[in-house]
Length: 201
Image (cartoon, rainbow, N blue to C red; front, side, top):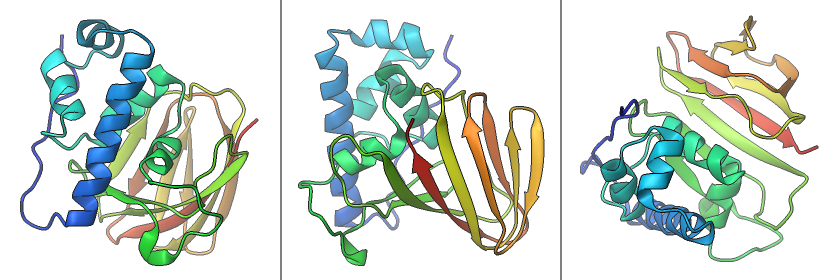
């Protein structure tokens, strides 16, 4: 039974750069499945995402939500940020602000910007996340035991749920936690912006 619904690409404000990023993400997802020898039916059974949705994601006919991307990355043993970094064409030592990969969730409007230069076997990386007012994003348990987050609030307020515990964060607050269970990020009435430093075990 399908539990993750497909979302059509909004034609209103998509830029050429954003479309290019989404195309490269789709290509990488297709390649990851092919590398494992999985059919679309196999992946659909493993993720509970419909075959038609998976096919359209890989053909870049729809823009996947953060939930769908997180589910797929968990199956492939990747993080979402690594997938976005792979969408870059090269691996420079420095990434200028206008070159940083920025992806937007079509379901919530949440945006995720990869600040760190892409490189193989990263031990740590920086992400900038912006959540629209009154939005929320949920993640399944991390596939990588010991994945450490340092979250620093830049603007707004955030309710962070980690393994059944809830933390209220405001501007300037910083929290460190190690992912093992599910997590949920809930924004208040104003947009929230924060930076996450991810440290791999």
